[in-house]
Image 1: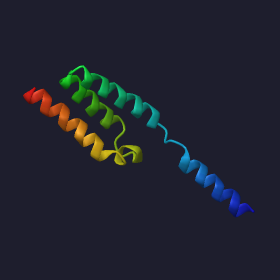
Image 2: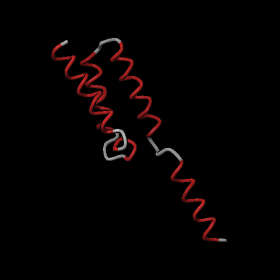
Image 3: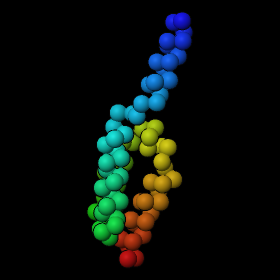
Length: 81
């Protein structure tokens, strides 16, 4: 019985979003909003700051391909319109 309780507790913890993940999601929403308004430099610097604040987090690592695409698009559009 104790093993089952510990297992269920571990599963519940794994299912809960990491601390900071909600803030990270809010920040990404802000970056996308800036991108829609074609604020490329602000988008890039905001995304960069967000990544610095949340570096080494699993929820960031899980989205690296998506984050690379966002950063590249911001940089490219800032440079070449």
